[in-house]
Image: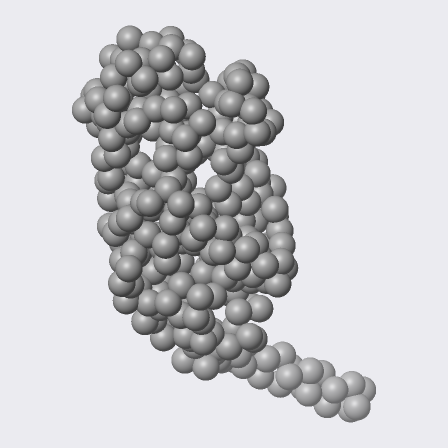
Amino acid sequence: MKIDVKIGRLNQVNQTGIFFLLPCLVLIWMISLTSPVVQAQATKTLNVLVPFAAGGTVDITARQLSRDIGLSLNMNVIVDNRGGGGGTIATGLLARANPDGQTIMFHHMGITFDTALYDKLPFDTKSDIAPLAYLGATPNVLVVTNRLPVKNVKEFIEYARANPSKINYGSGGVGSAGHLAMETFQVPTNTKMTHIPYKGSGPAITDLISGEIQAMLMTIAAIKPYIENNQVKAFATSGLVRSAALPDLPTLHELGLKGFNYSPWYGVFVPAKTPALIMNQLHDAINKALENPENKKKLSGQGLETKVMTRQEFEKIYQEDLDRWYKTITKLNIKG
C-alpha cells in the first residue's frame, strides 16, 4: 500500500508535469516553423520572365506551370511580362540577372531567331543564356478577320495574290514565332503581305478581331477561344498532322502546301552561369509541374503537346535551331 501510494503520487506528478509541459512544446514547435533557418528558402522569390504581353501561348504556359514550380521549390513566384523587341528585352534582362536560380524565362523557338534578326544585341544568344527545360511544341493556325471576304485557304491565297502588300498580318513582334511563320508561308504561296508587329500576340488578336489587321499564323493556345466564339475564321494548322486541340481543321500540308511544317517548341531558360546543381533543381521542378495530369490536360487542350526532355536533349535542339534559323532568316533577308 505504501508503495502503491508513492507510485500513485509519482504518476500524479508526471501527469501534472506533462500537462504543463505540453503547451510549451507546442509553442516551441510553432516558433521553429517561423524561424529564419527553417523558412529561409520560402522567403525567396522566383522571378519568371515572359518576353511577351499577357494572353499569348508563352504567357499562358508560364502561368499554368509557375504555381507548381514554386511549390516544388518552396518559393514565391512572380510572373513578369516584359514585352517588346521581339522578346529581346526580356532575354537581355535574363542575361544580366544574377545566376542564383531566382530568375528564369519562358520563351519559344523565336529565341533562336535573334542572332540573325538583329545586328546588335545587348547579349549573346549562345553564351549569355542557357536552355534549361523543354516544355513541348505546337503548330500555329492560320486565322483571318471575319471582315475579309474569303472562306478557305485557297480563296485567301488568291485574294493575297490579287492584292499584294494590302493584307496586313500581325504577330507578337519582329522575330516572333508568328512573324517567321507567316514569312515562311509567303514563300511557297507566292504572296506578299505586310507585317505589323505588336508587343505580344494579345494586342494583335484584338486588332485581328476588329479588322485592323487581316490575318495571322497564330499559336493555338492564344487564338483558340476566339475561334470557338466565332470571332475569327480559322482555316488550317501548320503542322504535318492535325492538332488534337483543333482536330476538325486540316493542315496546310493536306491542302496542297506539301511538306509545310511549322511547329514552334517552348522552353525555359536561365542565365548561362547558373551552377549545374541549381539548374538540376529547377529542371526537376519544371518537369514535375509538366507531368502533373491537370497541367498536361490544360496545355494539351491549348494545343501544346508537352514532352519531358533532359537538359542535354534540349541543348541539342537549341543549338541546331540557332544554326538552322540563322541560315533561313539570312536567306529571307529579314531584319528586326
